[in-house]
Image 1 (cartoon, rainbow, N blue to C red):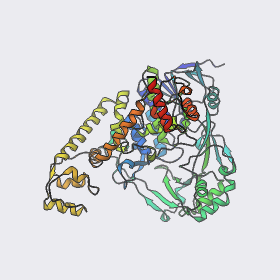
Image 2: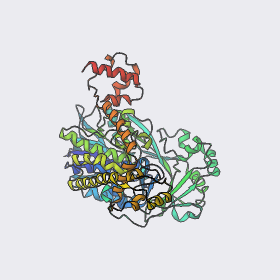
Image 3: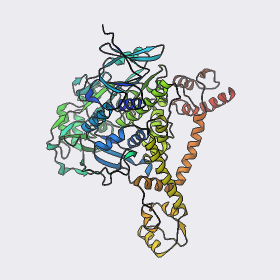
Image 4: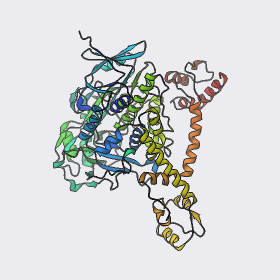
Length: 624
């Protein structure tokens, strides 16, 4: 009988993007941490798309970086192409995305983990939670060894009872054929945790040598590379980038899919889990959007030293013979060879309504959860939850108040609030439209919103924080200077305005007024601003945004103040909603189950109406 026992401060279960950020944060804060993984080869694995960032996801990576996390630093070291998305739109939706060298990304993250003090990586499967009187005490692995801990963070990703499926082929493994974690789900159930079954999927990987790129549109990276990590501003990240390629499905592709839809595990009822609405398989897209005669297909490199290419936009679980027919109907892929088949993967996850905003389970003290086990999807969503769970596990150990990032402070706050307040019946994906204060929550100002929290927690050192303060001093000084610069209606000035399709001036105006014009910006007006000093690109961006959107920002700040008032109206922990007169039965049930901590949170619960909130406010006033 195995009686081995070890003691750590924190146990992290899983070494994906959530697990890496969680373990690094606890270890960097000085707490002895052990991170378990079913396979050392799965550390920071990118089992699906070969990129970091993208619309709204780029915001999350910047926020992880501002809190003191690793994802932004890691992708800055290992990208093979970088591009800023949505440049034609306003700054609120600008989103950085970088193609990653998958293998290098994983190796680089593993190198950081292995050389972090207080952190141990251990290959092994966690089979049980050790819980006494609703307090976590540690975990047990399949060998029987017990690892005692003051806090445990579950970051199991898509590995819990994972099952990979394409056609009639079913393998009980995690992604890329790695071992599944088959034991822990039952322990969660035994401890009263509600489990769900979700599904995600991935497209085939194809051999670069068998692609005819001449039939596709080349997608190059940006010439001016913008970093993810604020620590890399002012540093050169220039490198030779690798192109991606764009092609399209067609009517032939769609006919092949429709003719074989009965062989799709998704439509044959073989797949039980709920899939992601915003990242559907190609068969799902063809059946749901029958009016579309083509869909975009992005051919993306998996790395610098491999011929494997990712077929973005054509995720599938169709049988192998159908996959070949389908892919070979796409222009440029007529003679393509498949390296790895596309497949769907089912896995167990939890109902996130069981969590508090600090990502701790409501009914089990010291047990935290982050990433896809919480019902989210994506590397970035996982990493953001991981660092928050890591920070709060340390706060729990220290007996201090948790760090709660609210909806007005970050996309990570929106993400967590949506999960723990509204729940999700499908893999949750972050989108800019989910953030009601997105003009304030821009990716370029993530440091202004969150770096003070990272510094206060201890993940941002004094040198980095002082660099940030110096940056903001320069930003504020330049904004004030511009407001005082008067521009006279000289011929030179009006010639400049005409050249830029801007109305001439007949009287003196401030430089600020000119920058506010839609067709002008801080950089353009440099030629009529002789006293300007050279500034770093990130400082210029801040100055331009602050001046150009001053009125909109002020209006959104007023909205945030109203939001804060509602968030500030706390609800007693022991409130009995059945005693609140005139509350509807559905509201009583939802409020009792979710246990909102504030009136603001209560107002966002599905099934709780504005009239219910009015009744609740009156009741809270009566018991003050």
